[in-house]
Image (cartoon, rainbow, N blue to C red; front, top):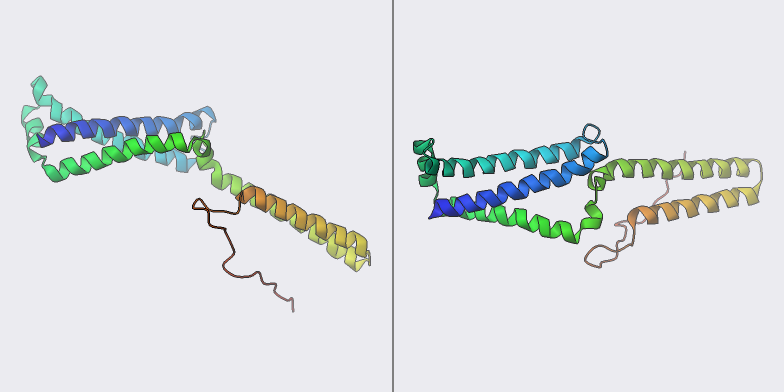
Length: 193
């Protein structure tokens, strides 16, 4: 009995993991990012190898019914006990649960965006740094040239741009549980020597 539960559970795992592999690879291939996005490619590879492994269990347990590798297949069936079957059920449940989450979080994982996050954050950080730094340089130069109005305008523009960009990056200032996100410590400015 335990091997039949293992067979069904392993089949569910193999199917779920193959579908996850496709869900990760499809946007990578469409966007030409298989080589440029190694994290996503490795994630797809992990799910693919696990799908093949669990699918192999199914094949080995079914082989005796086709009079192929009977001894090995029966040995695999006999090795199944309640612990192995339970873990296979849990693994299958996690695979199925993943698909229920994909539907709920589809806007977050649409396409290859899930894996482009780091690259986008780096780009955004460089843009923020460039915009703020340029504004501060203009403000400093304007102060040195005793152009107080121009310096203040450059500072105001830099502060506004930084605030707007950080708000765009972070979105609403609340976590998923509704808690307001606050700094752990107040900002400090270091005095130059």
